[in-house]
Amino acid sequence: MSATPTYAVRESPRARNVRRKMSARDGLVVVVPKGFDRDRIPGLLRAKKHWLDRATEKVEQQRKFFEPEPPGRVPARITLRAIGEEWSVYYRPTDDRRVAAVERSDRRLLVYGDTDNGAACKGALKRWLGRKTHEHLAPWLKRTAAEKCFAAHKVIVRSQRTRWASCSRRKTISLNLKLLFLPPELIRYVFLHELCHSVRLDHSAHFWALLREHEPDCRKLDERLRASWRFVPAWIDRHHVLE
Image 1 (cartoon, rainbow, N blue to C red):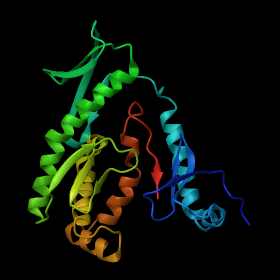
Image 2 (image 1 turned 180 degrees about the horizontal axis):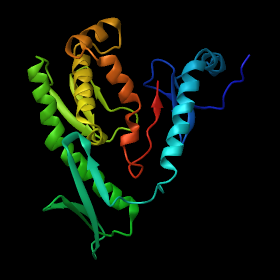
Image 3 (image 1 turned 90 degrees about the horizontal axis):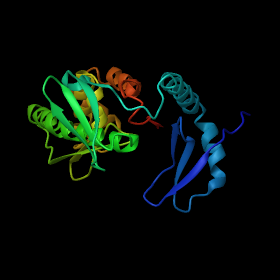
Image 4 (image 1 turned 30 degrees about the vertical axis):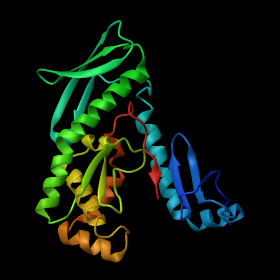
């Protein structure tokens, strides 16, 4: 019998089922519903050995990928593959304690204020990415919905840690600002995936059949999406591997 891996447990009152998450920072985390019998966890993990092996391998790949780039470094260039833009980033210290990012001509992005504060600089850059997502990806999603005859009632932008996007029961679609770093064909796949969730919230056979109608290569694109954390720069954060 294989040994049970080291793990941490997080109880969530909103969880309905047991979930497993693996990340370079936190290791293996098991999310359980409130009142769940924790003695059952080792057996559940042994039953998921195949997933654990794959998740561990992906996390090790992430560590190797990010090691050359110091996590505290702010970027000098930002490549937004989704919309075909590359920006040079310049930092100008001022007496202002706040940090802001503004666009200049020739794809130059000026970050000014307390630029010695790395966390504040990253926060300003994230806010800029959020604005770019609203400007470019939200309209793109709505065009895709109209083209495919789906209803996208509301689109919001967030900085999600474990999901590229999500769809609520009210058909509100949340887009992760990190989508801007992905190539266009994966963006379109994410849009179609979430639009199909506006009809089927699960990942049942019916959901995949619906998605396949709109994107015949959905399975291949889904596999590519699972490895697309490579496109996201280390200065933002490191992705989790979510079951």
